[in-house]
Length: 399
Image (cartoon, rainbow, N blue to C red; front, side, top):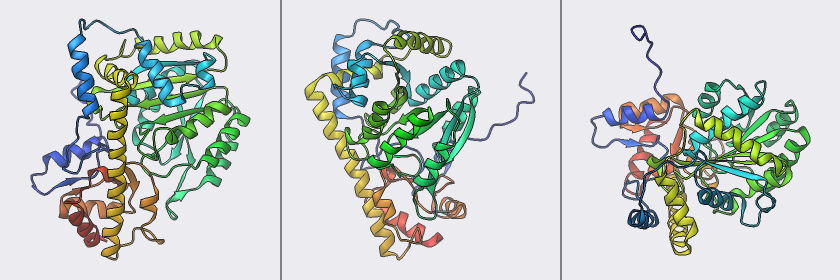
C-alpha cells in the first residue's frame, strides 16, 4: 500500500516552523507562525483562562461525551459575542451554532455542508487568502474560484476590482471574506465597504461565508464584527466560521464554532440536522475543555472583564510592534513600498505582507537565521523591543 507513496510538500506555515526548530543557530527568529508572543517571546496562558480552568477542575465530575453540536451554553456565548445580545437573528430564532475543533474544523464542516447541499456550488476566495482555505475546500470537492482583493503595488485593497468580480458571480455561489485582520495582508474593508458588499451579495443572491479568527485584535471586540453584522442584517443567510485560538490564546485546545444564520426559524432545525450529520462522520463530537473555558469566561462578569483587558493589551502590543518596526526601517532608510512604510501601521492584526520578495526571504533565512513565509508575510507578534534591531538590520542588509 505505502511502498510508493510520494512525499507531500511541507505545509507553508508549519513546515517553516519545522525548519526553524531544526536550525541550530542560537539567535534564530521565527516571524512565520501565526501565534501571539509577549514581550519576552512567550505564548502566555491568559490569567482569565487559568482562573476558569481552576473553577472547572474544582467542579468537574465527568469526562462524558458532549452532544454532537456541543453545549447550548457555548452556542449562546458564541452567538452573543459575534452578533450581539439584541441581534434580530438571535431574538428571531434564526441562528444555530456548533462547537468545532478550531476555526479550521468549522471551515471543514461548512465545506462538507455546502458540498452536500449544492454540489455544483463554487466557493470564491480572496486573492490572497489564508493558505489553508484552498486545502480545506479542495479536500471536500468544492469548486474554488478567486476574486481580486489586494493590490500589491499600492498595498491597499482594490475594492473596485473586488466588487466588479462579485457582481459577475453566478447566483447561489459562496463568497468567503475575512471578518477582520485579513490573513495574510492585514488590510480590512471599511464599514462603508462592508455595507456595499453586503448589499451586492444580497442583490446577486450570493451566500457570504465569514472566516473570523481575530476578533478583538483590530479595533475592539464590537468594532471588529461590524462587517459581519452588516452581512447578517442585509442578507437572509450567512455562514460564520470563528476561532478562539488567538483572542483567548487557546491554540492547542482547538476551540472554534460554526454559526449559521438562516432565512427562517423553520430552517434552523433542518440545517442543524445536516450540520450534525457532517460532524458525526468526521470527528463525532467536539472536545470539551476549551469550550468550557470560553463559556465560563464569557458568562462571568469578572472573568470576562479580565479577559477583555488582557486581549486589549495583546492588541496594543502588536500595534506597538508595527510602529517600532516602521520606525526601525525608516531609521535605516529602508522602504518596503514605493510609498514608504506607513501602510504597515494602518493595517490590522498580527500579519502583513512586508514587501519582502522570495529572494529576500531566502537570504534572511540563510544568512541571518530569520524565518519568514515565502510570500513575505510577517507576524508582528513575534517581534519584541529586544529583537527588533536585529530584524531591521537584517532586512536592510538583504534589501
